[in-house]
Length: 423
Image (cartoon, rainbow, N blue to C red):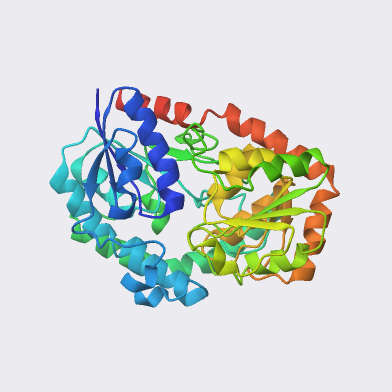
């Protein structure tokens, strides 16, 4: 039995995969501690792990980020993205290191890729450590353009040269801005320069557990040997819990040949004017049954619903998605993996953080339509949903990649690799 620390930023999309890995490690008899914010304490304790509180690291509620980090504001735009990186990701890392060092010793640290303090602790304490990629891999590759550019992966020598040229100004900007901050953070922890510059140097050099599979994520001909795609990291589906009274309408709609469209904005960007209300407007009066989740706010925040729409704050995806024909979302990676795992094609509208990158992967993989905006109008949404419903190739492709996600092993494969790192 090993004493294992699982580190997660207190965001729902980060806690889901890390808590699932923790549950599998507990099932195998390891002594597991989950280190995350107070809001998600129960997610780790409910699977039999201990909980380590954020003390030196500034804790926060992911639904109210601006209360703790005012510069994040409404989470939209370049300034908000920069504040998210500097104030939350970099800003809380030294406190994470202090909390982990005070709670040790541990035999193994498993850290969310964006919880930078977990990796620093692994280095500082001389403990084997692994990274869990909760968003698509950001590791640079000769086959890929820089993050944020709407350019597809390289297909030959010319496009690799293109990528090399595109990377040069990005690397220069990183050397002037990100690298000094990371270097100061490492120096304050008593660590020397990173082997790899920038935030990518905070991936584990021992083991990276990447969610997804090639074909959904971009191919990398130079992928390091310690990077492993493990599919979707999620706990096995349990009982659905309390369901709304209208739940039987889902099966009835499918039986009657009516399409079921699920629209969600996840749990972070939950302004209903971005996607929920435009989708309701787009599909009002159509044959579809539209099922909305608000990601936290009460369902009545949407006001009076069209006759063909139903809403709830949350619904169990593992039970909902098999009854759905199309998912409309803002391209969170966890939700995208869940949709593909269920073989459901998508319409995605991503604008913040990693979401445009996820949206581009959805379109590139053939599993859906990327609207290339976070605030699409009703007409574009109606056209995209109609396109997906009318193109069986997208559902077939989602089913194909869903089977590959399952075959990649999920938490079972992840735990095997982690136990191998200990040997």
